[in-house]
Amino acid sequence: MSAAWSTETLHPEYRQQLRIDRLIYDSQTAHQRIRIFENARFGRVMTLDDVVQVTEGDEFIYHEMMAHVPILAHGAARRVLIIGGGDGGMAREVLRHRGIESCTMVEIDRGVVDLCRTHLPGISRGAFDDPRLDLVIADGAEFVKTTDRRFDVIIIDSTDPIGPGEVLFTDSFYGHARRCLAGGGVLVTQNGVPFLQPDELAATMRAFRTLFADAACYLATVPSYAGGPMAFGWGTDGAVRGVTPEILERRFGESGLETRYYTPGTHLAAFALPGYIDAVAQGDAFSA
Image 1 (cartoon, rainbow, N blue to C red):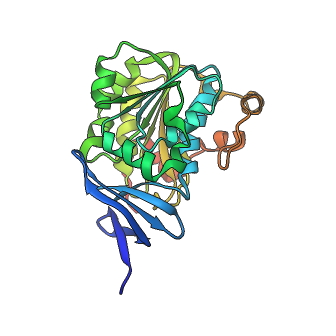
Image 2 (image 1 turned 120 degrees about the horizontal axis):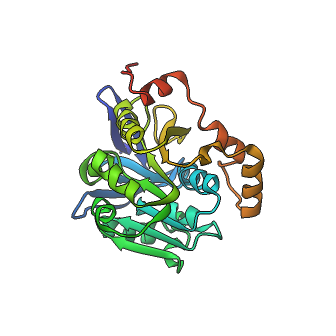
């Protein structure tokens, strides 16, 4: 009997496949198809509409870089907002910072949260039970449009710009998210793999340049997000991206964090972009 494979079409000419060694869950929620399976190399894997969202094997890279870069750069973050993040990994990393007083997580799909708590508990590691976490099941775009709360760090842990995640890449959404930042606050976004998805990063950077005094992006290499380095958008009106190595080392040491990917050196180096990614971020057309 031949093995079953999960196929993700990353580009019309390029697909990624992960072998399904054991299928754990496969069903349709009100918003998307969720599949959870085991793979010998990556551990448990969750896909939404056949797009890889998280794997036990490499999730630490993505979650550490999206959470610790803005929080440690800010230096005094107390209130964090996560849009998306239903697997709980982002909340886990945010709540590892002792200075965080509240973390609001807005996830549109209750089904994702419930399934991840049941079948992927090693990703959230108790984050959903932390009293500092306020889980809101709602549309993230509507939340930032209507809330009167302000946050020191906002993390857009979204899916790709298809289906329910599409609205989280619009200029209107970014404008509303900026309104929710406290003074000196930082907004970070996931912007896909620029080599295969250049339009995601280009559109976000175009919007950020109109919204923020400091619009930039930084990188991390996540194996299951294939095609090269993954980009994260960065927007703030402050100067915290220029934090010195000495201050960053001190903050990291005082945090007591034990990380597998993030280091202060990696933090600073992540903003050094290869030429083609810098060109994409500046709005230049790119093709391989």
